[in-house]
Length: 363
Image (cartoon, rainbow, N blue to C red; front, side):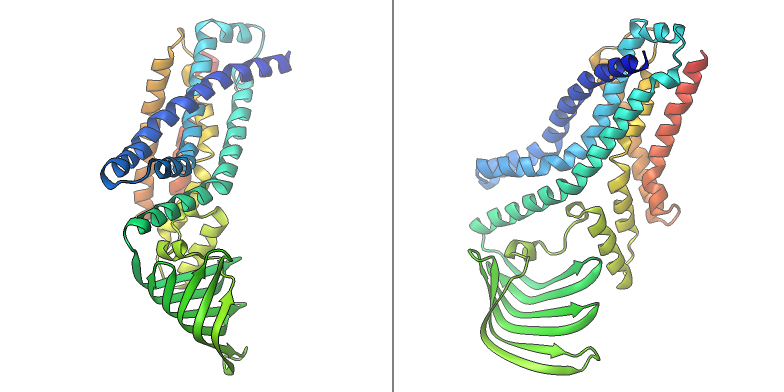
């Protein structure tokens, strides 16, 4: 009997959840992505195929926010139908409590949260980086791009590995280049070169007319190597150097944690990085929170239509993100910690859902 109830409620949740995914994807992608791309195609001459590629690359970042919205709508509509057709009353009459009925919703919400967290870690950073690089490459085809004073640090397992500096970057060639290599956090090598050209077919940089200074562990100069040409396999492409430092939405949780730690050592205020770090975890778990909120809200004496459920979901999401922005502002002002600022909306929404459920269970 218990397994049948779980399967039945789970089945009721899936269809409106998928409807929510489609509806919110259409709404948000049109407002947050399509408008700018249409303008780029119409006014700036961006090729349509490039615009479609950028749309695909930018969509995963939107989907992270859509999962919780779809979970809220799915729970609202599913429990509205169960309640409107007196199936909730039938369950309770047979001795099944509301808290027991809500278990499949919580399980699905947790499952969606974990899927969303994995998606935001594995797919979103790479997709955002690909979109950024494609925009840079596309603009460079029509307007020669020049960047001066290029400075890019490279981390490995949270430790500074390499620092790149070029006085000028023009197309695929860097001029007056300095590369500092670090071993276990200590400076071990300095490379200087008049220029470095990107070898696209080999995915390497060809450094020309340079010197390599080897540094001993004591910090003293050890050896000098002169070279006319020398190839180095470096993971950064010209597009990466034009991009500069990664944005937080191009980093995984670990990368952002390491990046924030490095910036903190450099004396930079890392409050915003800490907020974004916690948001990367809090937003995916909003799916679980909205499941616990949407289910009790859907329990009423009459069944709500999909349009009403969609409207109610939008209102709840609106106030959720308004509250999120307020908490983030308080954290920027040092009133709240970054962790509390990111997770507070989830605690409040989840607490409201459990409170409503407890009230419904005794009515």
